[in-house]
Length: 246
Image 1 (cartoon, rainbow, N blue to C red):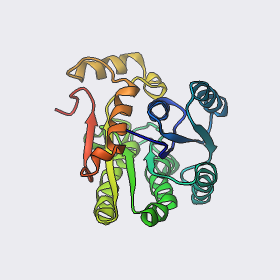
Image 2: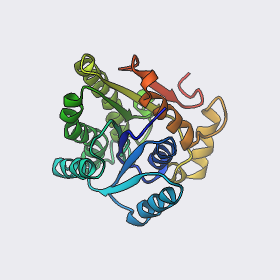
Image 3: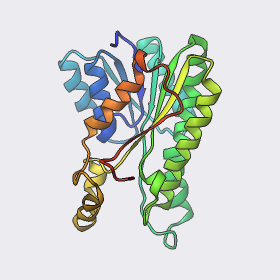
Image 4: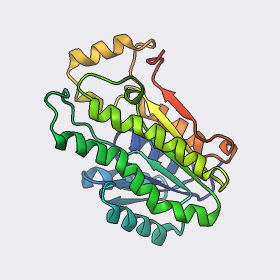
């Protein structure tokens, strides 16, 4: 399935990103996991996976800082020699209604979630073009499709990833590079755990399967999209939400 290919996973040390890092690493992929905060958690994940024989490196930086993206890309090239896969997973929330949302609240979320995906893609894209192959997976959200009270900034950023991904997929279609989007619903992560219990219970009631998703259920779809057998899939959106958008 995999034999030493290299994946760069932004936001790859916590939540869904950590699950993606772990699943890819255990499948034979060399994984460079990016993070902006939480050095201790990043080091713990790296050490745990390395003890199990996986090849994992960690890289600190901000995805919304182009210079950081270029530096991290350089570190990965120095460490592993190439980048075959990019998973743009880094994301934040700053939830407020539009009436209470500040310009900074809006801009900070758009910067990390949407501009950050652009910046990291720009950092690796020429390398993939030169090699004539690559896989890019952007992690969006069901909220980008449905919207949500108090999450106009988050919804806009995740909706933007749909358009970004499809446009890039068209541009790269004849260059051996696929670009796809994975849109999780409510997944059992630290971010979702911060929701008030009453709000979380209300969400679960709306999910036909009546449960939260698991991070590894998202990671499996990402792994599938990176496989050689998925080379004819590009510009697609995979929703993983227990039927929430039906």
